[in-house]
Image 1 (cartoon, helix red, strand yellow):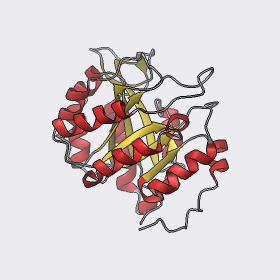
Image 2: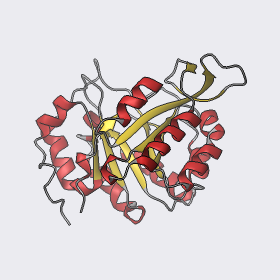
Image 3: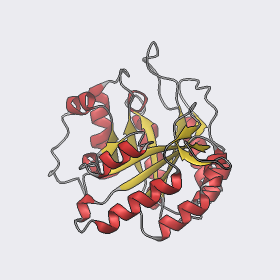
Image 4: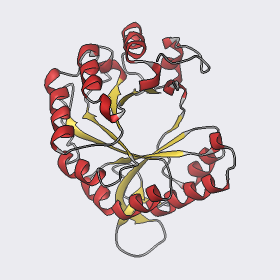
Amino acid sequence: MKNLTTITWAHAVNNKTYLQASLASSICMLEADIVIGTVIGKEGPAIPIMAHPPATSSDLSLAEFLETVSQHNLKESNPSSKKGVKLDFKSIEAYEESQELIGRYQAQGLPIWLNADILPGPVDATTKPVDPVKFLKLGSKHACAVLSVGWTTNYGGNITEGEYTSEQIGTMLRMINENHINQTVTFPVRAGLAANSQPVLLDLLRETSSLNSTMTVWSSEGDHVEVDRLRALILTVGLERTYLDVPQELAGKLHLPPPDAKAKN
């Protein structure tokens, strides 16, 4: 079984310069943000572009981003040099406008994750989630894409305690079931909160095991994380079901098995 914690990530690959640098690196997955906006120096209607709110302009459209990564992968004979993309949609409008592009590049074999925070989460998060029903229904049309669906969070800074509740987990399960999701799913969970949530996260992964479900542990710089608890969660879930996308300092403290270690069967 593959040790998924060894997959590496580039974040906010939202401009041409960083995209080229990421393609030339050993990074495995390129995470980028999509909003509706304009390409700098080009006239015309607003389209899906690579930018993080509140920005509404970029030198890189979603179409050019996907084409550039796709061409890179076609030229690479070494499978380990090929890249996958994690598309983080900041609004349902950006997602709806991107459907044709997603379908085209998924059909060409580009590894695509479709990511959004579709439900409100801890700790009393007030950020508006992306519409869960629309996101899942459209996502289910792209059977080869991984659906990466999570919760908005309010954590970090003065907020150093919190957890995912059984209600939040239950709502996610209900959304998955009611929308008849039948493809690979990963659940992005914030490290500091996930560390306190082992029982409910194990329930979530057990209930979705038929979807080859995984969790993607992420963290912001400065988040308070109970390292021993997080390590216990990751080892209990298994290296073959856990992606790790956290700052290097936190990753080092976890003392996980090295890249060549066998994940448990």
